[in-house]
Length: 375
Length: 262
Image: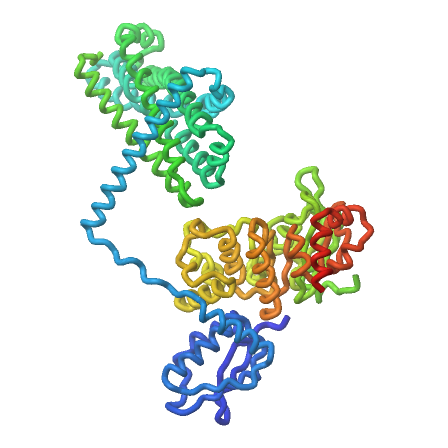
């Protein structure tokens, strides 16, 4: 294989000689030199192709574009001496080029009002769709209550393991560290007033009522909600969802309900686990920083933490779980087309479920405050 | 075979590939000459696609050597591999078009990556390739998910042809196509071979393709190439695996069709 020589056009005794390799490698330089070729002002141009060593479709395209350019400025062009094989290729390209499309102009961009309108319609439709999805899931749950024998226990157990058991280490680590951070930041303030022992209230109530359920839900949304979307989305792309429907398995029964129920069971348990670890983190910090020993801490703990506080925190978890699972599955079913759509919907799923979890938490705070359940 | 390693476009020697403990190929030899259309056939699991993947450097063999355009590719360096990749095109079984890009952008990607042509020129070349692959003029603006199966294969062929490769690999090009589209695809490949001087290596189960489009057929079995000849000669072979493959009702029907047509 000889190294490619550049394609050239040069003027010699009244004939324009085309030489070298008219291939993808060869024409690159020639293409850049196009403006430097000085064609005659008028009259016929004779192109001699006998010097062309090799030609491919890109080279043929280049040659044809030279001819088209010349004919546009009303030079009759005569192409001579082309090898038979090269001529055949040129004819093929010429013939196909006539059929080739070209870039169509993009649709005119919308003005602001139109864009706003589209945005509103898009999101309204999505909210309505999501409501319909929640409705479908509820109906499926109701059907399940009537025929518990049809429930997919194996899928439920599998989901419990991946969403629950496998999340234990990361939740333990993060909850413990949250306990340490809260105790450290709050402890500095309490110390200046000599109110060291109030660290128990600070850590226990913040953690049990608010932070442990929230942080657990956010981890699970990032970890499990995204996995639900990606799994269902990929199944949607590979037509597995359609296959389930064809076989007569409602995707709702196999893909959504086990996930929903597994998360509703797992998230409260994970929250209790996070409660324990975060309070433990606070205890470690209290002893190190504030000279509140473990036994002092644990003596005071039941006096200041009512069962209500604990139950309120854990009670929010199933609601968070339902939000995460439903958003994750819904966004999975929204996947259309291919890989890029899976990525987009997974992002949307995580953002939406975290947003909705925090919004729901705010709602809980206001509502529970309203009925006098501050403590 | 008396062909020297350098003259063949592809020369495989003593190739051994395995996944874990499962040996796929053992001491496999294969030569493919310039300008040939060669099909790799064999039963399911005989390692046709694996052989193809080893030749296009997607899979490292355990032992043996593969020469591509006279260059050893087992243990090849990154920059040498990049230069070689410019010289062949591959059509994947499912098309493997990038789903977020239009057909025109898909075809333009190899050109953008391997050449310094201006964007306007790349679009022109891409449109030409799309037309060469036999797609209608408005296909360039479409996304892969908007195409039918046959059009998807053609769009993928257009991308494989983007760099005007001397060597084209096709993995089950006609699988899933209707008979008319499949026949047209075969014709297209033969036409491209003649006009562009392509060497084509394909994996196929399509007996019509084997009869109408190939120059030679390599039959894979028992971890080696157990038969390598033109279709007419291969169907006369004595090897029980080859007989079983071609002597089924479909195999006989395809052959009778060819014989009566001649």
